[in-house]
Image (tube, rainbow, N blue to C red; front, top):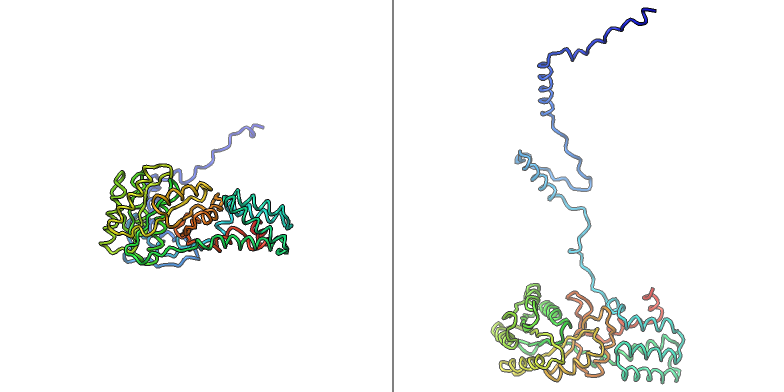
Length: 400
């Protein structure tokens, strides 16, 4: 039993513990030298990228140089990512795509979808829609009564036939004002742009400059809106974007003097088209309205026929108030053409018909979006096509 309590002998120490520490240090150092001579393998390259062999003779030896070489190698490889939006050409949207979202278009389309039956109730609702869409009471009543007479004569087989007759009647109302602007016959052809605050005058001028510049015409802009802060800078930005010179005198300068100097410069440089901006003003502001008359008189000192076109820019969302605006501006400065903007949003759109009926002034352009190409030459048939579907079947497809 005493053997059980006998202490076991201690285990032998590892040989390394008894080894000389100096010998261990020399072994570690030798191992580091061997590892330093081993070349690390290159990381695998993606199979979908073309390999460009690096220049080994001129390869940089430093770490910074290695990073530079890696960057050059990455730049040399073609990109496998998707094409960016800058290189993708976006097709221009159609009139239907732009106008179908307007309140006028949505209401008319819904009306015909809900009332497929051909009766007096449908015509009564149609009259209400036209009036609330700013077409005007007289124009709406005359149009609906004409359609009612034809319906009672059984000229319409169904609601689709009535829709076709409505489309034709609307086109006939707009055809007389479908007159494109011809900026030829005078050099320079002077276009004076007027309108109330916020109608989009300066933006419209920038888009017109883009259009005429693309037509290989020489264009000059006159920053006559010296009243609104940053208006001059905004016009200069449009000029730089379209590579068009801009004549300015700074804020608070006399607008007539700026436009007069611009006309002199345009004549000396043989410019094709001079477009003059003016300060936005309400038709009820007598002093500012008189300033427009002064601008026209000053221009006639150099060219008795100038301005050759007085374009009034109208916000399509203003509704029937646009009638009073045009009447006042026409009496002061002699408006000769209209541009109706912002028709792609919440605008009712019926004001175009009211303006055509009330004044008969040419509608030169329609604004259907923010892009420069969204300023379209007015086309009566395309405008009505954008507001109303060709048939009830297509209207239901649009609604879906």
